[in-house]
Length: 211
Image (cartoon, rainbow, N blue to C red; front, top):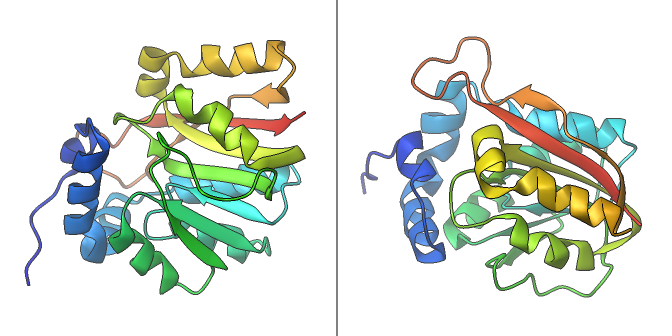
């Protein structure tokens, strides 16, 4: 069955969890080729690289894992085990096929991820905090899942960060003694050969440790 034509602009327009479920159900089978390959999508590798540079280790939770591109980048660096969570079961089905995840967990971040407290030594995300319904309000829930000393590497679309107050929320967490060593390097989302209206988009990658 042919899937609907989906663009990045459509994805950036998501507003609710239900909108996300429907779009990614339609996009799952073609996502890696029609989006990641055609746009030169390098953000998952950027996140994995910064996580590794911060001496991140497993077990890792890949938040908003999609089809598993960040998991592949982590696995390539010898980081394991990795679990994936995403709102879309169709995307998680594609992620499982890459054979880099220990487990997959269908969850809505605005509700919470059903895993034990302090289950992970690392948390990464390469495509969740873009322009949709998920904002900095989910950070306390993600911190709950992490052990003391856990390394985080969370990519946030730079424009979305400015609009949503993401950086300010992280700074409040650091000032409150919840996280430490916060850095926000800005990186390219797409490779040098990317074209189109979003080809020059950048992301801030929030790298920090849980206290």
